[in-house]
Image (cartoon, rainbow, N blue to C red; front, side, top):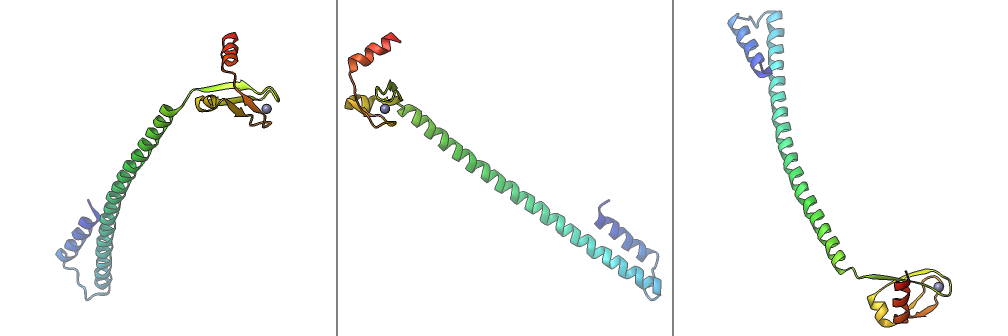
Length: 136
Ligand SMILES: [Zn+2]
């Protein structure tokens, strides 16, 4: 039985038994039943508000999931685009400091690259690059 129903039952019982509100005990019991009635009503309001808040939270949670999936989808698309744009990377060794240098087709087309380690400018000899690849 819900608290509201129990309090209603108690009120009905007090009326049915002819509780005399003029006696000391009757006054106290009447006030106690009123307090119980108020408490039950306030509890019911709290439960209703809590249910509304839970519904609201669910809605916010759903919206957040939508935003999250949108964000992740966008991030995935960006990753894919980056993968598509990725160009072959070549590697050579700086003859000056023997640091490994990585470069792409654009720099290869320029014909030279600056060593990021020692600053040595390297001229590409495309034929010798091809030869060294075959040796490996
Ligand atoms: Zn170098």
